Amino acid sequence: MTTLGLSVHDVLTTTRSVRKRLDFDRPVDDQLLEECLEYAVQAPTGSNRQGWRFLVVTDPEKKAGLGELYRRGWEQYAGMPASAAALADGEESERASQQMRVMRSAAFLAENMHRVPAMVIPCLPGRLDQAGFGAASSLASIIPSAWSFMLGARERGLGTCWTTIHLMFEEEAAELLGIPYDEVSQVALITVGHTLGTDFQPASREGGAAAVTSWNSWD
Image 1: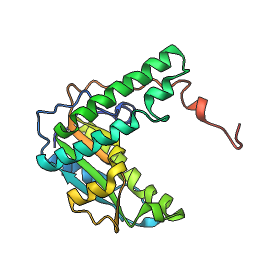
Image 2 (image 1 turned 90 degrees about the vertical axis):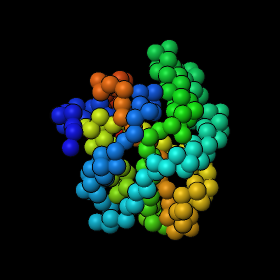
Image 3 (image 1 turned 180 degrees about the vertical axis):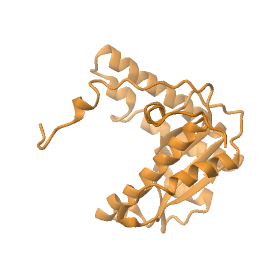
């Protein structure tokens, strides 16, 4: 196992969404992905239910198919009110500039999605859109496990990015990948690749935790 030797602090503060700094030309060894997935299955779970499933996609044709679905979704997302570009409107210049950098970075990934060395799709049994209250409990398992996978990847010099745009066409993705759509929900698509350099820094978060934390009552 080759690791960077990062401290827990460094891993937690420098695991970024990596888009432009992915090495598209360097394959990711299956063993590295397996090591990271071992962290995923050690994550805490909702109701002690380990219903998670992970589909690893490295086949070029299937990556190309997912890339096409993603680009179709990106074209729709880019014009939505919730897009990073739309959120930049009315912001202070520094914040607006940051939002536009995110938008350009995301557009770059959309254009190159098919070149990503590996994709990992976290899945859950059942249809989340029909689960009601149970959906929150199910997500309480899959999201921590996926984050553990991403932290493990960072320590191994791999970059990841949690994306959901392909879910606009989830049924088509399910058909492409042989996922039984009526029985299994895809939760995300995590891109994985070696990074160009490993010198990632903590992100700028305006006001830090204090700006978004209330104690004992909402204020």
